[in-house]
Every structure is written in structure tokens, then in C-alpha cells.
Length: 110
Image (cartoon, rainbow, N blue to C red; front, side):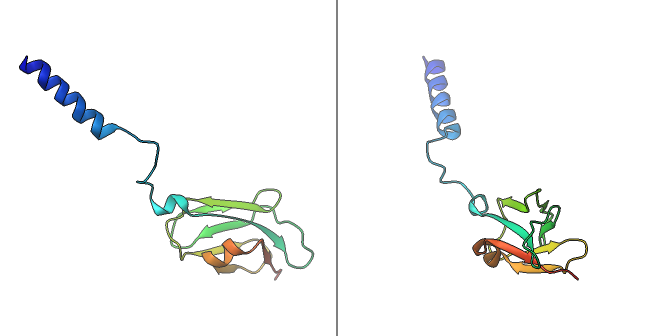
């Protein structure tokens, strides 16, 4: 009888420890931070493919797709600097808040 009681108690505790409910209240703030945008040529409005987009101070880097679009998910900070670099264009650094509010990021040629 003691063994059965101990087994039931163990299963109850194990279930309580590993249960996952319907809500994800333990989700970190970084999982909520997502930015996306489009990089264009300031001169003619063409979409720029292959622009290097980096979150400064991290190893997070991506490149724009063939339509000039980029996306970052799970950003580690809310006040990061975002750096845009592309051959023959001026580098551009913006605050994360500036990137997330702009529809298009325009780079100017050198």
C-alpha cells in the first residue's frame, strides 16, 4: 500500500512539474520582438537584394531577399542599433524603434 501511495504521489508531482498549459506566460520578452522591412535604393526606389542587415552588439545577421525584404525574430533588446550595409552604398545605422516604424529603408549610393 505504501508503494502504491508513493507511486501516485510521484506521478502527481511529475505531472505538476512538466505540465504545459494552454497559455505561455513564461515566454520571454525577446520572443515578442520582431522587425521586418524592405530596403530600397534612395535614388530610384528599386528593391535591393543581398543587403546585409545586422543587429549591432549581437551575432544576428540576415540579408535581404530578392524583393529587398528582411525579418528578425526574437530580438534580444528593445533599443538595439540596426546596421544596413551594401556594396557601393553608404552604411546606415538606425535605432530599432526607427526601423520598426518605417515601411522602407532607403540607402543612398556612395
